Length: 74
Image (tube, rainbow, N blue to C red; front, side, top):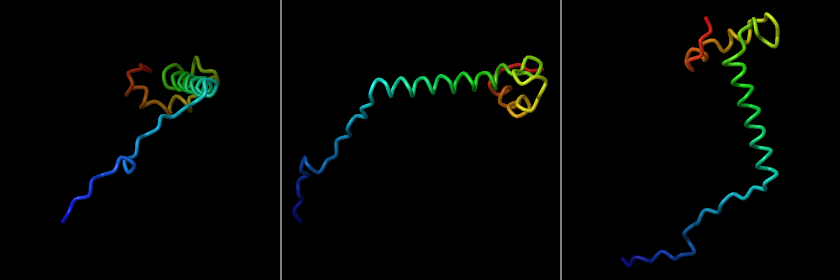
């Protein structure tokens, strides 16, 4: 049984993703905003110094993740 050679046209070459600078800045800004919000709610919000007053719902919701990431809260 003859083996047919693989032609170069049958192999696929990945093409790079091209993103405009404006779109890249928008994505980076969104990622930064999300990261800062996540850091605040997980690491800083403690009820007494909370933006939301004495409400402890957010603190209790992320309580275990605070300990897992090494943030003290007691």
